[in-house]
Length: 107
Image (cartoon, rainbow, N blue to C red):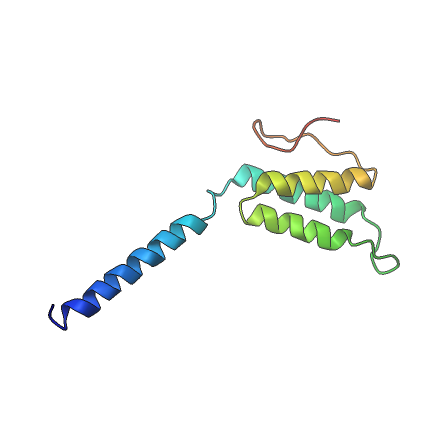
């Protein structure tokens, strides 16, 4: 094998490995409707949650983690977490306005 071919084969093998790894870790396609639902629930929590400087319950961190789930394409997990936080705070969770949006189960 010539000295020029060996680096070319290494480069091709490395490129194939990187492309394969990227395909395994790619995020699901973005959904504007589901992201809008995440933001709607987050804004509801921000609007009604009491000032966090007096009593820290960890909810702010939980809301941020749920929003990270949404931003990373894990909408169902993020929406369920946000709805659970709102219900725990005795807030009424609004129904999703867009048909097919996950997480809204009424009640």
